[in-house]
Length: 222
Image (cartoon, rainbow, N blue to C red; front, side, top):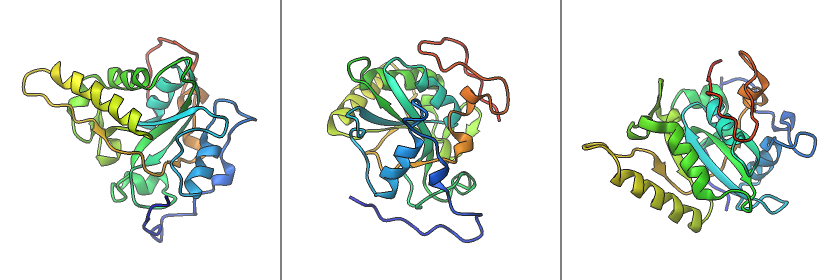
């Protein structure tokens, strides 16, 4: 169902141009154009139009998390964007103000015959490391828009995420608690094209490989 959103504040620049986003079939690893269509229709997809599962994760700066998930076997395409907020059609600068409730996130489409939702959740939590115990902070990125989260699209995804985080909490060091949130996925608004596949494109530096199972360290810069 369509959610209720705040109107975009005045003085924040031009409206977001979703028609400028890349997507399939022209760019097989790009989900942003299709994600925009779902967002504009007020929908949180469970499956892509071609029948693949959809998942949404947050782990600080979306550049690094998108590259992490691009490298996961079974992930077909990805989009960087904003979710869990109340402002319709958010833009980067507005989200970074911390006033909209959104976090930077990555939405993925994946083939369940090649990977599983728990595997994707585990990839996120492994990448977070000690940051899973920090609220509104991942690495040096601080602010509510940089919080870590798992945003299930189905009841089954929710149960699997809860199971993993319960296990991680049981294994946590004394006096540490897992701060990564689990909330039902809300509308995912893709970010500006500039942010899409940012590290793989080499924006701001040398291109970093999105090849499956690539083990090179992810360097987040901009």
